[in-house]
Length: 214
Image (cartoon, rainbow, N blue to C red; front, side, top):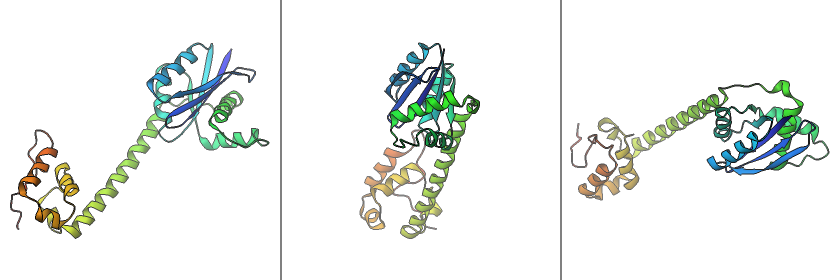
């Protein structure tokens, strides 16, 4: 007998619902998004004769569980939320309220009713990770631009002599965020910050006592 498993994922927990071929609920509940929760789900799925697992693409939260299931030879599919939403509206016209437990059952019903829409893609997790990486790169670039702009106002000449993005220099700025505070600080205190936050094994790219006059 085939079983259809819907999983609704959030940051801390995931809810699941297992239906048999007749659409009857065999099991339901929730587990934490952790190795312990994943192992409990795997134990449950292993006790079923055959299982088809469906979850929504939920940003980055579904990736660890999806990867875990696939690596353990479980048939798992990630569905576009827009497709599931249309299905939900169709079957819930008289009761449109939503909750995690109901969403898990809807996903299981979707798997049972639309087997032709379940397409296995081993790279689905990689694509999501790639999008996250691109987003982080864009955020990092924007942050660097903001730092550069602020320093051009506070310390107009510093970029000529120092790598303004090195970790030790950013820590100095965090400790002394204005020209006045740096001017009043003791060189030994600045040197201590530079030493504490320099990359181990590498010589700092600047020092508190060096002269940087053109």
